[in-house]
Image (cartoon, rainbow, N blue to C red; front, top):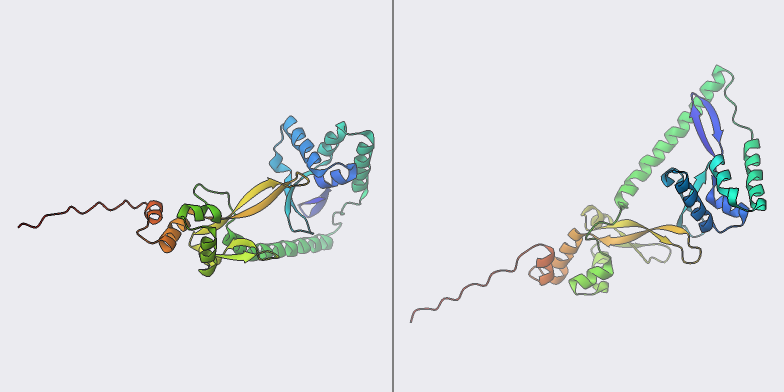
Length: 258
């Protein structure tokens, strides 16, 4: 349920997630998502206004889900079986039966409510200020042309993936994260020097078909060019090619007069 505040009066706007719809109807979540996408397209509504990220508390994996208001929820289930529709309608009646937050009846209540809201905003601002540097350090963006994974970088340099990974870890370009310390992530030095970064990716979950959101470690073109010099030598073919250097012209041979 979402809440909007206007002039110190709180209005409750109930919504229903695609995950809850799937649970109530007994349908697979990725089937519900498929139906929602088709419905939004049919009524000329942008998906971006309804899509959000849900994090599974068990595995920490991020998934896409949709949040719908009443009219779109009922429109969605119009084509579902009668028993499914009834469960959705009963749930909406339950949501709407919840008492709305009453508006303040006097100046003291209004000031108290405004003070509480101000405290909540300050707490959120403090949380954002704390998380922003971490988010900036990760620099999770879309993949750019020339970005490479460690396997492709090893092939490009002709030295193999393991040597690239060992160098990244030894020289603090990257670090290991995750429960088993297997995930490669940019370290502070590699990130700030522009040598490596994380890029976002979406992929279907193997068993359910749901759209998942993940992150891939990538070496930037700048990082690859630097690796070529450090691992292959400044005059090596990979170093010259990746740093834009031309092959030196041969020095002409002059015969010494007899």
